[in-house]
Every structure is written in C-alpha cells, then in structure tokens.
Length: 118
Image 1 (spheres, rainbow, N blue to C red):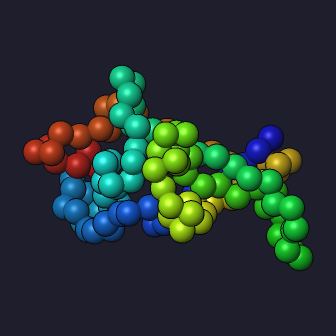
Image 2 (image 1 turned 60 degrees about the vertical axis):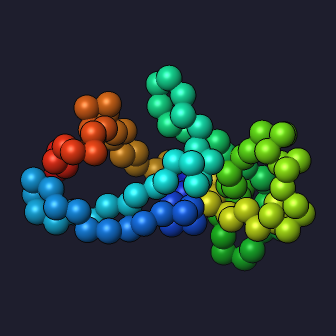
C-alpha cells in the first residue's frame, strides 16, 4: 500500500470563509488555469509525479516527494529556475495503512450561483 499527503496550499489558492447551509464554511478556491490543471470530460485533474527520496532524513518515513507534472512541451517552455521552483506538493510512504476519506461526488460540484451543499 502507498499512502500520501498533498499540501494544496502550495498551489495558487485562495482560502476563504463562504456562507453555506451550515453557516460559514472554510473553503479553498483553486484557479484552474493559473494552476495549469487539466480539464477533461470526466473531471479536472492535477497531474502529479513522484520522485524517490535518495537520502532519508532521520525519523522520516516518507519514501517519495510529489510535484506537479507537466507535458514535455510545457517543461521545454520553462526556464531552469522555473523548473527548480516547482513546489513540493506532498509526500508518499510505501507500506503503511491510512484511513481514507470519502471522495467528492459529482452531486457536490456546484454552479457559481448555487448555495453550498454543506
């Protein structure tokens, strides 16, 4: 089993309180174009790549670092500084068990004028 964590605050985001059915709800707004997310027929995707950690820090169990992945054409447009500046979004650990959260259903996807479903 492989488990992992992503720090979504390392993307370009806005964290704000939004009024919903249960009162004020802490939300994360992720701009699609600014974060170079892929819009497909069945969803919006953040392509990821994992790199094995060669030198493990003492006390850490992480085995891989996660960064956003880009197409070859997109990478070739970037400077060396831009490539190095791609933030680490999270980490993976091979061999541990972690509880999972329920995925968001399509029913939870909102139109801009809808109230929050929570």
